Length: 193
Image (tube, rainbow, N blue to C red):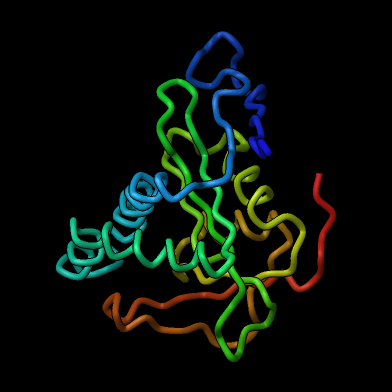
């Protein structure tokens, strides 16, 4: 069954092929997509971690060895029922975004579902593709997500999708040099288009 979703980027100039309607498509991720999808996450993580995560740690968590390790972990999540979607650029058929939601394993999870990853390369931002990627992966389910506390763009994105800042204290990720994290929660099911 084809679960691809064309993303209408018609708010952009129609004659510009870089932003033409239907440039991006969301589809289910398959095992063979995972290495390229992890590559997208690595690029995005480098971008958001620049100046926030100590350089040596950022190099380690985005280095060549991380792709293989993350692919193995994502294959396990896939086997356990995680929902993976990718965003494909029809201009060159490359993966430009990845999202994964899964049942939370955290004992203090405020909802059963966690948005475990959502990353989109710059060329696919600000045209509705990120919104469609999240909707396709999560639907209207209640969920939570952890983001870097200083990532205002991510916080605004999730708030547009019905998430609110968690009132409890955030967390600190010592593996990322003591980086502060903020949890956002969408407690109620929402209607999706």
